[in-house]
Amino acid sequence: MDNTQKFSGKAQVYRQSRPSYSQELFTYLQQVFGLGQGNVVADVGSGTGILTRQLLEMGINVFAVEPNLDMRLIAEQDLSDFAGFVSVDATAEQTTLAEKSVDYVFAASAFHWFDPDAFKAECERILKPGGRVFLIWNEADLDEGIQQGRRAIYEKYAPKFVGFSRERKEKPGIEEKFFDGKLDEKHFPNPIIYNRERFIGRALSSSYALTKSDEHYAEFQSELNRLFDDFAVDGVITEAQETVMYFKADPALLQQKMQTSDSK
Image (cartoon, rainbow, N blue to C red; front, side, top):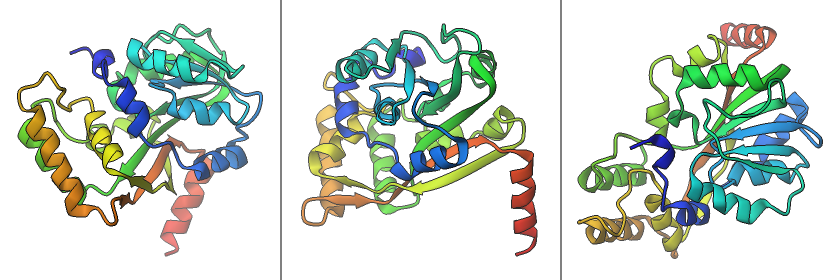
């Protein structure tokens, strides 16, 4: 299946169950990189507009680039009242944006679906001089029991499951190559609280999750419910996760990091 169609039919559950990104991330972007009101950015692979909304609320003008019709329509429905919102029907590799038109490029929970070389070339084309690219994910500890429980269910019932997005994006050297060997990263706490509906919805929003038309959907959902019961306390699960941002480091910052590491 074309990557741009993997979330067709899942936009509503995606919007309802997926978490937003840590507010500390945006404070950091504002303080360190000057991100703020009046900036023009591209949110590439913007989906239902989770990151887009958080950027718009900062007074930023956002080109929300999303090729999937279902996802894009949800974002347009939810965000059209923001003056700075522009919905763009295009791919990461061919955004259709004008050359040197944006201050920053963001890809939130999306880069692992892109052709990294073509996306890099497109970022270089649309970024203004001095512009930056930020790759962002919400990440959980994959060694935790609940994550292992999810994995077992997906491996049993979901033939399209090839690993969590965190694992798919960690192909050897992909981020280092994208950022010319000058990769830096920042971690920000972003715990999420799941009730049963949101927990099941989060699983169903995955690209590889079964749908109602699949043969073993009832068993798939039943096991997800049992997993929730195994870990829930007073009807909720509080899952520790982080918002992690990857970006190209300044040489001076890299040197400072190396010196700090050497001194320990």
